[in-house]
Every structure is written in structure tokens, then in C-alpha cells.
Amino acid sequence: MDVARFGEDDFTGTQPRPYPNAWRYRDWVIQQFNRDLPYDTFVKAQIAGDLLPDNSELVGGLGLFGLGPWYYGITQPPQARADERHDRVDMVTRGFLGLTAACARCHDHKYDPIPQKDYYALAGVFASSAYKEYPLAPAGDVAAYEAAQKRIQLLQKEIDSFVAAQREQLALIYARQTADFLMGAPGVDADVLKKVRDYLAKPEEDHPFLKAWTASKSAADARAFQDLLLSVIEQKRVMDEENRIAVIRGTAPVAKRRKTILPFNYDSEADFNPGSEVVTQSLDRERYQLWQKFVGRADAVFRLEGDAVEKRLTGEYQRHLAGLRAELAAAKKASPAAYGYFHGMAEHEEPIDLPLDKRGNPTDLGEMVPRRFLTVLGGSALGEGSGRMQLAQAIVESPLASRVMVNRIWGWLFGAGIVRTPSNFGLMGDRPGNRELLEYLAGRFRASGYSVKGLIREIVLSETYLASSAGSEAGMAKDPDNRLFWRMSRKRLDAEAIRDSILAVSGSGGWEFAAHGVCAGGAVSAE
Picture 1 (tube, one colour):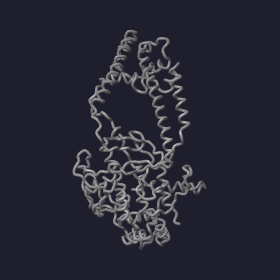
Picture 2 (tube, one colour):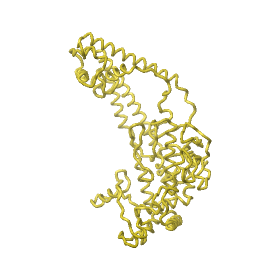
Picture 3 (cartoon, one colour):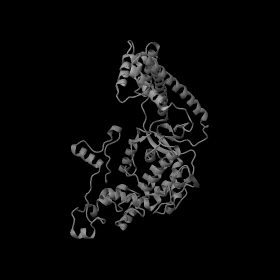
Picture 4 (spheres, one colour):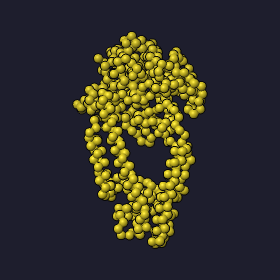
């Protein structure tokens, strides 16, 4: 899971948002190891499970990419898409091949024979793939749930819009009573009066427009401040409307584009700051601060939120809101239960080759680069559909793939791999401590039909695995770093193993997935 950079949430902006079904990929991985899915199929399922025959049990592996980072509106779409593709290229090449191909994003790799064109040849595969959710329910159930959710969302939007309109109207009503609040006149809203007094008592507040009234405390100066505040509110309203029209008129018509849908149905290009290039008007700083502090911010003096707004509604307004809330509650109660799904990837309807980004800049484009596998590993074409299926096949056919996986398994069992940089078999990575051992195990792995359990069984029944951790002067003199595994090195337990051990010793069981309806027992056995 560390190699797959598994996470259960992502950032849609400035706040993390959880993936509700991320755990299904984690459980899928555990289940495939437990049933000893051949490693070549395991790799293919995660890269192109949707394209494999009889794939109903294999599409869960697509969470490898479906749960990767998505950058939404954090940056300009070309940069966001380039960063997303970078993660996929890096994961595939380091995770499965032990090669740092992502280093070639901005220039030819400084140490390994990976030109910059190879990076964009692989990136084109992921530019030709799209995010997709795979429902774990019949189509009729999915349609019924989505129809119910659409109605719930429309009702919630209507409620929010109604409450927001009343909130703005109340703020304007109170603003028209500003002088009465400043003078403490009888009959004004007691809650709002307290907010006014709390604001006036803040030593850090020093608004220039209140200085005259602060000095005189006269009704005339209070009225003058009220007139000023109302003029600023009206100026802001007019300006906002003119800006809205300017954005509509100044935003170029949307040209035909490749649709980019991300998790949570986010259309990245359409939703990213539309109209941001249009020049708009704004209040000067002091007048804007006045507007913010009295009616603009959520904690503004004359702004109420939530229940404080609703309890001031009467008559038809109150009945209307109560009716909407009752309708919403009924719609939620009638809605079918949410269905489960896998986060994944699929073929984009418009597969493309990518241009090379000069110095890694997605706005400074160079020549087009056809999709293909790494040149140093054969450079086979990846032009069928997105190319994911061909990419998966090229990876499992490469001798590097079995060496990398064998080395990872050895490292998990012994605490250190035969190559001690498991994700970097390149020039700057570690050299194998025992090259013959690595080649022997990789060959046995392939010959066994890529059985992970078979490989684990062979290793843990060996004299090497059963060796004592006790040292010897002769061994320490010849191989102090234990590169040849003449003794068993002590290992630290990782966090997950510590947790499982505590649960096992306490009698609470091992790694539990009962909450999700999946059998417990996540550890990979050697049977």
C-alpha cells in the first residue's frame, strides 16, 4: 500500500474530502494476495483491469490510479493535468520497474537512459485515460439512487438560496437601523444590539468612518454613518451586478474541449475560476472593509447565520421554509441506500498523444510524442485506445518487473532488499548485494506462474530465513552490513504490524474489515 501511495482522501481545494469507497481498493489488494492472484495478472488488473476479459473481480485494482491525486481547482488546468499525469508515470515506473522515469519530465534523465520524450510517451497513456467509478450494484439501483440524490440536492439548493436571501434582506434591514443601534434606541433587535456593542468594544477595531460618532456620540453623526454604510452597500450591489454582466460578456465562448471529469463529478476546466481574466471593478480598501465588517463576512455585525435567521421568519416565510424542510426530510427517507463502487480509470473517448513540455512547462509546448514504452526496454508502441493494456503487457514481460517484485518481497521478509533501493534500480540506486540470488528468485517467480505465495514459501523455508541473528567475528569482518544475509538482521515492526500484534495478543483478532462486510485476516499467509 505504501508503494501504491494509498490514501483515503484528496484535496478539492483547500480542504480534504474523503473518498467514501477508498477502502475497497485496500481490501481488493489484500484479497488478491490472499488468494494468490498471479502477479502478472495483479499488475494488469491495476493498470487495465477494465480491459481484461472476465474482469468483474479485477476492476477493483483500478483504484491504483482512481485514488491517485487529483488537483481540481488548486492550479490552472494544464498544470493540474500535468501534475496528475506525473504521479501516474512515477508510480508505474518506480513501483513496477524500479526506474525513476519521472526525472525526465523537464529534461533527459541525468543518469539513466530515459530521454524526455519517453516521459511524455508514457504520460500520453494517462492523458488518454479518464476517471471512472464502477458501481457494485445493478443499473436500476444506481439510477434510482442518483435520481433521488438529484432531487435531494435541488431541494437543499432551494432551501439554501431561500435562507441566504432572507439573511441578506435582514442585514439590509438592520443596516437601515444603524443609527438606532449606535444610540441604543429602544425596540431594536437585542441580539444584533449586543453584536454592535461587542464590535464597538473591540480595542483593535479602528474604522475611520466611525471616528466622528465615536468622538461626539451624537444622533446626527450616527445618522451620517448610517447613510454612508447604506451608500456603500448599494455601491457594492451595483458593482457586483456590473461585474457579473462583464464576466458573462467578456468570457470567451467555450470551445470544443476534451471533457475532464474528476472524482465528485468535478469538471476541472469548466469549474476553474471562469472569467478570471476579465477586468472587474472593486471598492476602495476602506469602503470594502466597512462593507465586510458590517454585512459581508460570516461574523459581520448585521449578518446572522443558520437558526438565527430562521427564528426571525414569520407567516408565509416560516411556513414555506418548514414545508421545504419537510419535503427534504421525506426525500432523504425515501432515497435508496447508497451503493458501493470502485474508484477507477477507463478509456477516454478521445485518446491523444501529448506534446513535449519544454523544461516541464505545460504552457510551452514542443513536438508531439507518440505513445510508446520506454525506449531502453524496447519502446513498443502503446497506441491501441489509451495504451494502458499494452503498457501493462509490456511491464509484465520486462525482466525488471519480476526482479523488482522479488526484491520487494525479500525486503519485506528480511528488513532489507537484495537491492536496498527497491524503487530505484537505476545508476544512482543500490547495486544488488547478491546478483545471482536476485536472478535465481526472479526466474523461480516467473516459472511458478508468478505465485507470490510460492515465492514466500520458498524463502521462509530456506536456511537463510531461518538463520540466527547472532553475529560472528568472521562474518562481521567479511560482510558487516549483512549484504549476503549470512545472519538474520533485526527488524523494526511497522505501524500496521504493531497494531495487528496488539490486537492478536489482546484477543481482539487481527486486521479487521468486518465493518465493511469483508472477512477479517489481512495478513498474507504462506499456505
